[in-house]
Image (cartoon, rainbow, N blue to C red; front, side, top):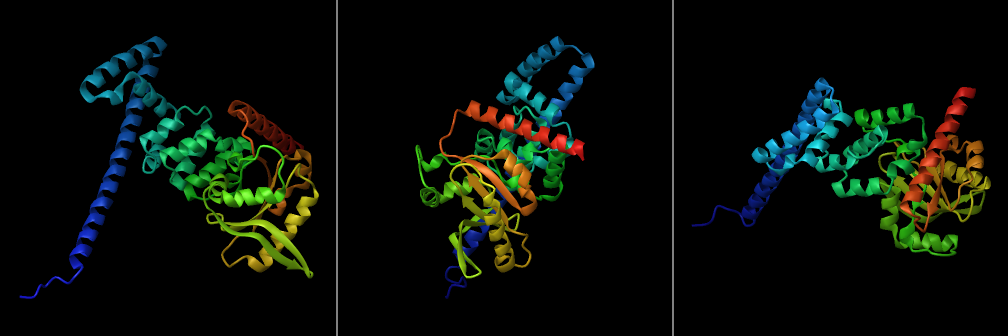
Length: 349
């Protein structure tokens, strides 16, 4: 009697069933994680309510110790005193239940453990929403926070009102703007440069470490071409590096420069961007953007040239990573100065 099962059909059946099982396991894992996160939030909220009702700091310390001891006996080490205090802090710094519920569908409790110690609320919200929309793993989030992504992103230098609007845009529409994508400075210490180097050797090193360079640029960047040749008025010009950003839907021209930024770089980049807009931009795409990477910025020139109106970003790059504490101080100072200048400009209008 001939077999009614076609050759290979049994393996296809097994493959389909295994796929269904894996999908179900993933769904269950996400559901369990979201449920656990919401449980921790509700526990934290309930304890906070009790502490607030009694209005005594000493009572708060005492009740946490007592509760922890009782909960550990019945439910295990998840409710050790250190973890319970973290749960209480979690409910305090994420007070809105609907936002926590939304985030918990993408972020695990381990993600929140990284976010909780961050001191600035806008900084926490930035990482939370970027993590959700970009689907960062716990390891990636830890690296982004450790690499001071927020402090290096253009949006951190904006007034708080603008930052809140940008975060709201990510939360409600999953929309990224250039100010959420571009950084300053870019950390290129992985290139291995210690002393002097040329623009060509810098470009060569970037291409040799292209994967790491794209990781430093950020999510969504795709490499297109090196030394992109364009012809204007029978004259050849070359764009150092050309990328495409998927979410911004824009071509990104990158120019590598040694030394300080010079005003002449603006005209060069504007020519490249207008050429790309006229001859390379496809239907449905937004206007190209330019990124000029210099080893040192010229803050006043950049400010006076109003490069943002031309779709041009200027950023420094660092090939030798300084002490992290010094870098953090430098970034914080840059943020404060930038916000102060923006506030003064707003007052003078």
